Length: 158
Image 1: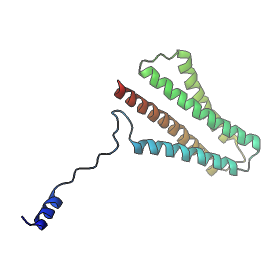
Image 2 (image 1 turned 60 degrees about the horizontal axis):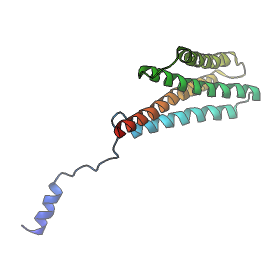
Image 3 (image 1 turned 90 degrees about the vertical axis):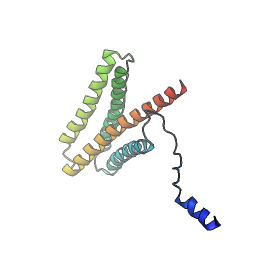
């Protein structure tokens, strides 16, 4: 066999795929984790840039900032309480109820604030509402990804 035939044979052989970073069973993909973090950063950043550029008074800006922080915290807290309960980790009824109540209050405060804000045009109200909802959803997803990753790594150690 000539040397050119050997080269041809090597070319014809199917190449084995390069092993990718090993993902643990139950762990979210890197793409999903990245998309979740990106959604959170986009939502919060857009909301904050909107507040920074708004013509409203400083106390109004503070209100909308506080509602965002309260909403993010309450959404993450509720997600954790629901997940704990589902996994058999003890969650008191009062904490579970307060978590639901806090999220409902945060969403209500945002809706009522935007509804009553006469100085904000309708398109801006929609912008704040969408950035708020995106931020809440992304915060829940990021927290879920962190927990799933931790759980998958703990299973591997056992």
